[in-house]
Image 1 (tube, one colour):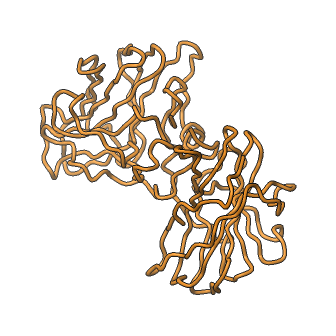
Image 2: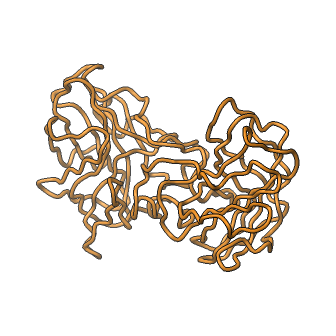
Length: 365
């Protein structure tokens, strides 16, 4: 599970594959400045640690920062601390500009955050002096899902800078669980696994908590050269349940493909199922192939993003249950499932992915 700012909302309402970008007005290039991200927890939780994604420019070695949670006061941080601030931690020495997580920082005392209450995560300079060439900047996700806001403090107040209504990126730790948008999952990229050609396959492993009907898939791929048609095979365990072929000419590159099946496929609940992509007749070559797009992530945080039974798979095996399972990639392939209870597909806008409420724990476990 995770905050309402994370992938549950970003996939179902927007697109997980929007670009991460720095917030031009959300910058700390003076010791008096601060940046803050607002959010609403999806559950009441006791947070012990926090990690924030930042955009760092130049060399900020010698500049130390702190973070803390504050309550909200009319749309700005109130100054009232929840729990206690972190100890001071050093900025990262960078060569040029780069997105950098602060690393998981322990709070001085745990912060108890109440469900659906607005809080602010505030970052500020504890010691050292950033300047116009060496500074830290707020990083943001290219979507706003639940009223999240980034704000900038110029040393006097929070209100004289344009409000940036885009989602900030951070995670928190509650016991052994992580919540939020993992700060080192930076941007969409094609997987580095072997491309889809010959017997090489890519796909997903998943399961749902209710008896369900699979009506198609939504996915993003790139293709090189002139590959054969793309074959989509659905498995329930190791048993093939359905196959459909997509013509190569009908598959756009680096854009959302939606493949609706000519015959819906019923899949059992609480059973490992697989959707596997391969080339027709095991054709193609390393220069005539397909590649799924993925969202790279540190394996430590993947369970904060999706359930343990939803994973990217790859390999050459004909039995999907023996394919390799990745814990460092969020796959750009999602089942489109008909819900007999709601009769509703939850589709992402603007070329995003599709989420279904029947997934165990949602998309975030």
